[in-house]
Amino acid sequence: MTTAPLISIVVATYNCASDVSTLANSLNDQVFRDFEVLIADGDSSDGTVNLAASMIENLSWIQSESDKGIYDAWNKALAHASGRWVLFLGADDYFTQPRALEDASKILSNPEHTAAWLIYGPVTVVNNRHETVGTWGKAPHKVLWQLKHGMPFDMPHSGTFHKRSLFNNIGTFNSELSVAGDYDLIIRVLLNGADKIHYSNSMNIILKGDAGISYDYSHIGIWETMLARKARGMRGVTIPWILVWLRAVVRRQFRRIT
Image (cartoon, rainbow, N blue to C red; front, side):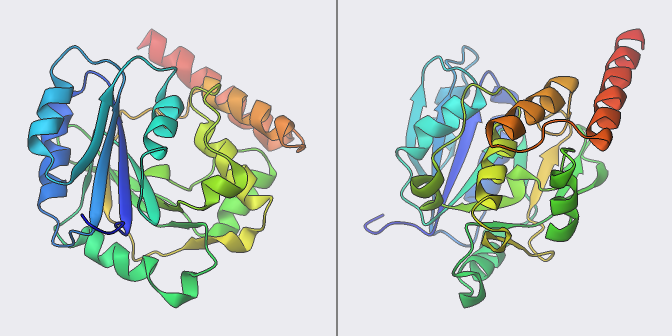
């Protein structure tokens, strides 16, 4: 590409060779081609890197080395991203159909979204049998209510396009967090104004596997959201937060038993 693409797609991988081909095929099948793909691999040993490098047509950067986790990997890739908008995908994510990015590009280029830092839409969650589990993602007013109470919020990161310039304004992901780095980023965006977050219910372009780190909102994630809130000058614990925490602990114990 001679000019900067509209979209940079960042994927963090680690020993996920079994998922790469599905993602690669969905990328290669896209009618819209004004995008680049960046792979930040955590030193895989199962052939993930070679497979990604050989299969993904729009690959602009790939690196494999040990890291501190997904947010560290994303930060490394961000340093090489040149797109106006950045989308972060998991290795088990893929696009719903060949015109998914074309449809998204129309929304991203809409003058109504000129001031937006984040534009997101719902994500369809599927299991390993490709059966639909449900849809994740709600309108901003519901997300803001959840954020106020410190609860997990329905703003799917894999369905969120980030204006690349926002990272110059508020910084990159907190790599010290293991599962709530995206939550921390959203808080920082909201502290700069809720009007910087836009929602489009017609931008349901991602199918996401149900085993992902962000979908399984564990007790660790809830604890980290509290730490992130306190670090940003917000109240860490509320009654709804405590209820969500207790529910997560019970679910974890139930999973151990079953």
